[in-house]
Image (cartoon, rainbow, N blue to C red):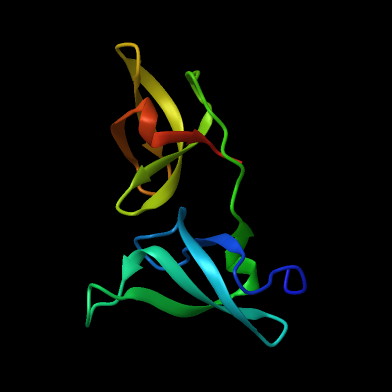
Length: 126
């Protein structure tokens, strides 16, 4: 992937930090650093020192993926792989149930928890 990303590309960063495994955060590529790393600026994460400043960090190429296409979903079925938007990022889970016409339970295997989300905060996992 190192050779295909360039300054300004919209990406998602897959976190490998404990407590954030299985989550993706929107970012923009600032620059390439060698063949295996990039400097990125996050869209929704801020620095601890100044919460008005977007977080910028260097990440390995294998932690990046192009921004997935926008896919409208009118509903999901049991066991569908989804991303749920929570805590400023997209978290990978599986549909484990439904409540009403537009709320779904998502099970996060990595953490062993199930959370209810409205359809508007879910997308198919790609």
